[in-house]
Image 1 (cartoon, rainbow, N blue to C red):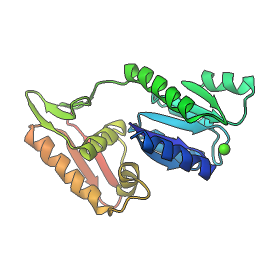
Image 2: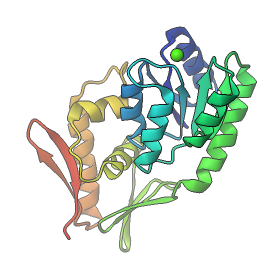
Image 3: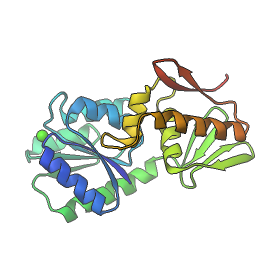
Image 4: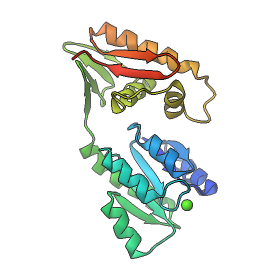
Length: 224
Ligand code: CA
């Protein structure tokens, strides 16, 4: 699973990332609310671990905006505050679970398993855009009777483009969301993967295009 951690206490954030990595999950870190929201909105995460007290925008606001935009990614709220009022507020805004600090590793992993199982029922098995269907379970790109298998990064890229339909995504933002902040590859890799995806769309005879707006970014387009 790929999990987003939004937590401003860096040591805790890194500990969480270590726990997830040891559990063979992928973890991305954000240290403030605004960046956390921006990343969570990409729709590429299986779950979000969200702190309440954050600089920029607090966790409740991040969650409220995320749900308002129709994003149903399972969210585990994390906080030092154990007041009942917070718990109710978190659940009202659409948090799937509420964990108070400090917590045990086993408790955290059990919560994540629980919310992602529930999330699995909400998450579609297929994404559609124009004449194209993405089968998430088998990583297939399908158009009518033709299909092609996608690599892991290609699948993330098409998910990101579909989740942001109609919106121009900059090369930098695609790079950060898919390859991450501490990646050792160069952002030129985005162009390489865009061209892989274009070839695959062409191969299955799809009318869907990835248009590029010079200096601004990429956008998925389908003829009406
Ligand atoms: Ca905090």
